[in-house]
Length: 203
Image (tube, rainbow, N blue to C red):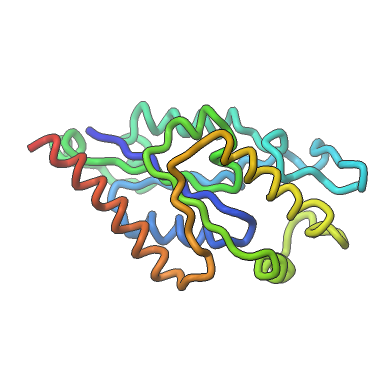
C-alpha cells in the first residue's frame, strides 16, 4: 500500500479546519488529525510579561502525543482506518490502495519531525483585519482577554510564520478569502492527481 500525508496549515480563523474536514469527506481511505486536540491543560501554559497565556507556541502542545498518533497511522493505516470507520477493508484493495493522512493545525510546519513527513503542504492566509474580525466572533475556552489579539495572537503569528518559512519550503499558500468550495476544489484536484500517480505504481 502507498501512503500520502497532506498538511493543511494556516493562521487562526483562516479556514484550515473547514478545508481539512471537507477534504477528508471527499477522499476515500483518509484519516484526519487536528493539532488543536493536543493542547496542554490551561493551568500549565505559561504567561508572558503582559499576562497573556502563551497558547501559540509548540510548548503549549503535546507534540509527542500527536507524533505518536501520526506514526501509528504510518505503521498501519489499515487498522487506523478500521478503528475510525468500523469497516473492514478488502485485503487486495488495502494492499494496492492509497491511504491519505490529513494533518491540520496552526503550527504543523513549525515542528520539524512532523514537517519532514508531509508530501503536500498548504497554508491558508487572510488579512489582519479579517482575521481579527473572525476571531472576535469565536468563543474560546478560556476566552480571549481584552487586547489578546493585538498584544499576543497577531505578533505570534508573524513570528511563527517567519520561523516556518525558515524551516520549510514547497508550501502552497492559499487565499483564505476565496470561497470554501473553490479552495476545496483546488486542493482536492492536486491531491487526487498525487493519489492517481501513486496508484499507477501498481499497474
